[in-house]
Image (cartoon, rainbow, N blue to C red; front, side, top):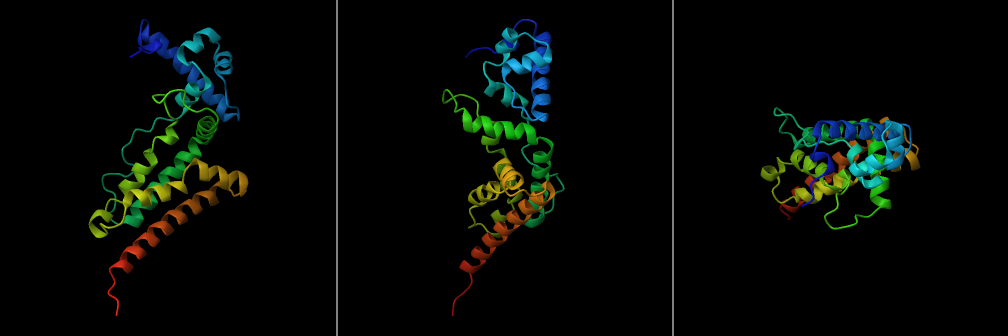
Length: 209
């Protein structure tokens, strides 16, 4: 396995250089650009040759600029047991992530559509790693006892389809909704899907005359 360039030699200095490139990329993203490696290098005062040692292409640079959210759950330890309340808390956190990191997530979406991975082992954009689905599944965890026949993974995928950066871009850009209204619709859509799943499950166990 190849050792990353910044993991050898003057590690601290190389980390500072890498951080400078990432911060330059984030600044450019916030201004509405999708920066190339050359643009990030120029903005940070680092030579282009050096920049390419850290990021071989634009895709890797954009990946580095995306927030790393490694939390296994968006819920606190004292989260409620009510599944509707849990889901509402998770969607609230997700929409806050969309608001805070919108430029970076938009860039990740563009790169994921425009530049396919070069190899099967190539890094996927963060929005393709399924973390949001895991967060939603965690919100739905009480269903394991109250409604064990509901496919929680399938339901989480359906909810995620309506509350990610893709849906956000459509609502804000195409439907021309204010961001506050887009966030409200994401909450309503998620709760509607949950309510429908519960109703179907309850109906399946209702005795028929």
